[in-house]
Image (cartoon, rainbow, N blue to C red; front, side, top):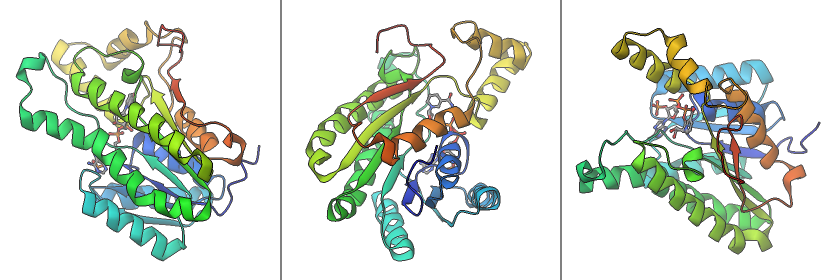
Length: 264
Ligand SMILES: NC(=O)c1ccc[n+]([C@@H]2O[C@H](COP(=O)([O-])OP(=O)(O)OC[C@H]3O[C@@H](n4cnc5c(N)ncnc54)[C@H](OP(=O)(O)O)[C@@H]3O)[C@@H](O)[C@H]2O)c1
């Protein structure tokens, strides 16, 4: 299916690896021009080369920390200087650290968690929306987590900061609908990215088990009986960014092999 977004311009945040990179790859496969960003330049350059090599897409990349508002503003300005516009924003960042008890989280820990997932999303939207409003076309897709559907044990900071993103996104989706700008959120369950590989390797070492045994504990509680592939999330991001998703806004969609047990 042609998604109808050839020559659109997308900024994909936190995209040198994992879910951001898979989303960028899916958009590039549709002929979208891309701005990638992450903090580490080496992996970022490798991702840009891989994506342009595989798809032929025009790819611009910039080392940016999404918790820094000045970095975000510079990223959006550089994108508009290079490509003349910005049509699609995919927000994404790293994940906050696990927490044993809420009493252990300091003021600074709260601020860092909120800056990482909530303020980065707000600041990216603030920077791109004026451009989208001017052209009366825009797509914003947030990469969050199933923690917004069902709190995950030990991920207090993720549970709190990401549900706030859902409140923010639903609210601005109403405000922006008349400008033909959609705002949707995708919620990965367990998807085999570098982050999950590293986490499961570390757990295997700590618990004296194999990585396969640790992964089996994840997949046992997933109705599909397997962990997800990054491109399975990337495909949904590209669809929500497409012409075909023109009447879909304010939604929160899990990509989790059936892991969430509730109705929505
Ligand atoms: N994979 C899953 O199963 C899963 C499930 C639920 C939610 N999530 C969430 O989805 C997001 C992406 O996860 P992933 O699995 O794709 O992780 P990943 O494979 O570790 O990739 C993370 C990417 O984000 C970049 N990044 C991290 N912090 C950043 C920052 N402050 N500014 C700019 N870029 C930053 C990293 O590059 P640099 O480190 O070089 O900056 C890297 O490109 C995370 O928030 C994670 O918690 C993942």
